[in-house]
Length: 329
Image 1 (cartoon, one colour):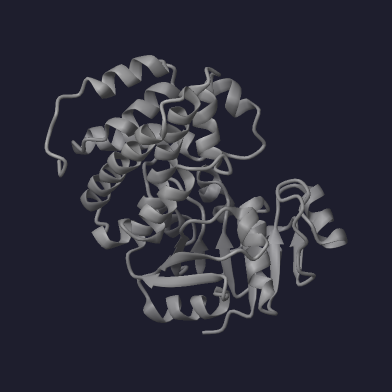
Image 2 (cartoon, rainbow, N blue to C red):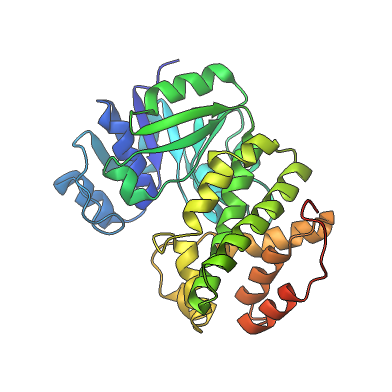
C-alpha cells in the first residue's frame, strides 16, 4: 500500500496540525476547509491564522474548498467535528479511500461510535482511528508526542504508520478500534468535569481523584462496549485523559473552568469559534450509560450542568453524598 498524497478533511487547528505532520516527511497534503479564508491563507501565506495562528506550514500543504478534489488523494484523515462527520463523508466523493478518523466523540442522534458512522457514510472504505494526547499547537511546531493508530487490518495500519509517523510523532499500533474511540470520546466529558473543579477552586487533590474515578467510568463503559482494558490504559485513553484534564489548552477543560467560575454553559459555548466536543458527547454518553446500566456519576453530573438541570453546588453535593463502595466498583 502506498499513501503518497494525503487528504485532510477539516481545516481547524487539529486538521491543520495533522496536515503539517503529513507534509513534514516530504509528501503532498491536500487540506479541505469549509472556510474560504482558511483556504486562501494556507495557499498564499502557508498559515492558518483563523484556527492555528503562529504556525508556519510546509509549502507542500495545499488547501481546497472542494470536496471533489479529495478524489486525487490516496487516503483521507477525517478531522471534522464528530457531529458533522456523517454529512461531510456523505458529500465527499465515493472513492473507497482509507479513512483515518481523527475526531473524538459519539454521534449524538444515533449514539454510534464514529467508525460506525464512517462505515455507513462511506461503504467499503477501510477504517482506522488515530487518537492520543495531542494539543494541535504542540504537534504543529514539532514538539514530541505519541498516539495510537487502531485498525483491524494490520497491513493497513502498518502502511499508514509508515506514512504519517515522525520522530516527534510516534505511532503505536492497535487492532482495538472501539477502544481507541471510546477513550477519546469519554475523556472530553471528564475534562469538562476537571475544568469545573479548577474553576471552582476545589484543589489539586480533588482533580487527581476525579481523574482516577473518571478513568474508572471510562473503563466500565469501554469494557461494556467491546474495548480492551489495555487500550483504555494506553495513549488514547489514560494518556489523553491526563492531558486534557490538566490544561486550559483543552477546549473541554476551558469550558468546564468557565462553568466552575459561574458562567453559563450557553454563554460559554456561544463565544467559541471552535468546538468543545465533550458538550455534545456528555448527553449521549449519559443516555447510553443509563440504558446499559453502567454507573457513570461524573458523566451524569456533567450532563446535568450542561443542560442546566443542576448547578455546580448541587452536583458536587450529589457526588460527595454517594455511599462508600469498594474502589474496584
